[in-house]
Image (cartoon, rainbow, N blue to C red):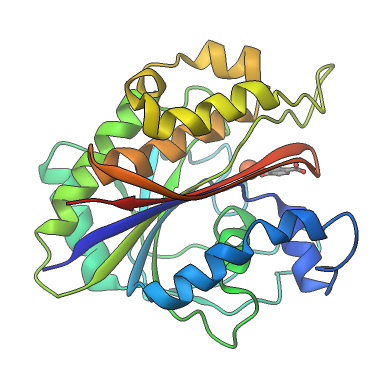
Length: 280
Ligand code: DHB
Ligand code: FE
């Protein structure tokens, strides 16, 4: 049987991909940011997950205003890095576990979550930067990745509670897949940031750190944070944090925090990262 063993959340700041691609890991600006991932790189090399269900958002790379799926699951065999304006990132293609992705799509849809099934798409920094942060620069990604895209770009994004319930449904889907697989679920994006308008550059470290605390201390509070609070307290792009709640919902009630990293600033954001282990 497949089982979810752990959850990872991390910012997916595009600049952090550029820093790795251009060999700037030891640059004084980047060093303290990447150092917070050293523990996680060692951890994942030992954990060796077979599959990551990688919850992220597309930033008008695969989807645009013509097509806005609230929740989409990638079912193709592989996904190429997207050209986001400067050429595609020099990272390997992302290989799916397509049988499992189709199983999850079926399970979710019969469980009353109407997923959009995607058979062709390129994946942008939202998905590839977290892989680089934890796996560095391998020839090929040493793990299968099921992309799960969430609309947080165009209003209305899904509520945190809906995301949480999707996470619970993903856990049911994984547990009903017969192959014996070590599966992780990742939530990406965040933390506080606003990329445009008069409040561009807004960072709210205090709010972000309480969010990190409450992933273990009071997840019920996080489920019910309204959109207006994300917008007011964390800027227009802080809403990316609802994707962390899909990860958290999938882990169930008993979890242990293994590692945390928080640093201000990374590009326009507070960079946040947490590793949570699912306990029996
Ligand atoms: C930035 C952060 C993001 O999460 C993103 O998707 C794009 C840009 C930034 O801080 O520059
Ligand atoms: Fe983003």
